Image 1 (cartoon, rainbow over the protein chains, first blue to last red):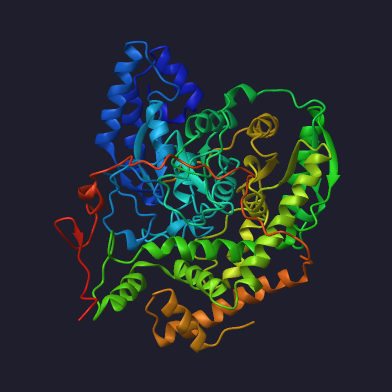
Image 2: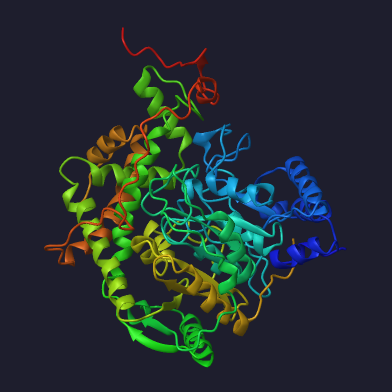
Length: 491
Length: 95
């Protein structure tokens, strides 16, 4: 079979079960695709030997009738996840040479379910960025380009390598993490499906920390069904993460294809922002029409504190990051740059090891947490955060089942097109996604159309805490109506 | 509130990041842009609002106070840039 990389995870499962191809053949197809796509810079490290070893084990399992839920499915892993004995550097120079001696819970869950690791995926350094341009390993290129143009576009970030790899068929699915939109925004930019589950659904153990009260892992995949299959394996209750919530993991795939008849879908007026491109507005209207046709009821809702989510995020996330990143001191792991004394060694190591965006955020975080400023910044931001959460609780209590919004304020932009702009301009990419992290809710981005230049656009659905099933149900309606989008191969 | 170059250098010192004069100048502008952006939070009336301390209302999990993973010294120092036996080596701290 020649086109194995075109199969969805659901199709792989069926093909392997019926012996149409082997896990080893499938893995070889992906390894060849990865080799041919190195210009996209999606993978930081490829692990072909490990992949083939895991695929052989999967073939043995399948032969003996002991296939597990993700048996033989080749996946890419974001560099933020600790993988035993394999490069894990959060795409940062400060973790130079770091090879974890342990495995993250999420990746361990995937391997326990039979998945095959193809390699580690590029990302924004420490997941700080919305374009995958802050990586120590250089920018990732989006497989999508504007019609009639050769200009490289960003895949979004921070899970940009994951999004590009899924869209360009360099893995069947990928792990991502989402602190302010880092799964959903790159999914939107590449016409892939990305879900950030409820905070506490996936264990954070072994995921290199950025902002602990916001970070959540989730999948990027080609279809809503595939993302449901992956999330079921990634999610678990983990005693090693005290914020892991003690709730059984449902079989999410069962929710895919469920009727949305009679559901109440909220549409928040605050997401209609100034300067929103008419195409995004039109897509949103289209999304409402699709859900209405499928029998859902569209309700106008009000989330009055929406505009304060992004500024509050830019206090909370850097504050937590400055604390989490204090551990990179040139002593226990990673880069060490000598200095005259121990303080100079710390300062030189961190100056050489962190990139510009990371330094900027660590500095902001250090400032807002420093003596005399805590109440004015961090405490106030956490109070605003409580109000943002209350906004959502109020609409859910009023009987809204899910909320429909655009996923991003625009389609993908050009590589290096925003490097001279103010940092705020880049931050505005997350304006529709960041509220969800602040409130800890689940959110999914589903491809919904192309703009006039032929670049992908997506819709976002936001659900009640731990109601990911509602997102898979409603997301499938969008997917069925919008169809599938794949980039034309040029690389 | 805005920061000047001296404050930037003080914050860099607290964050343990070596910053040159030119970098401090550039960071001053960037930090003031961000601090200006977050200023809008002052419009929000937060009187009587409890700050959010956890995303999901659950009791902090506690585990039994027992040793679960012991004798891991070799694994712990495995990634150290400088080590001697099972110790991390750092520049002299006490004269």
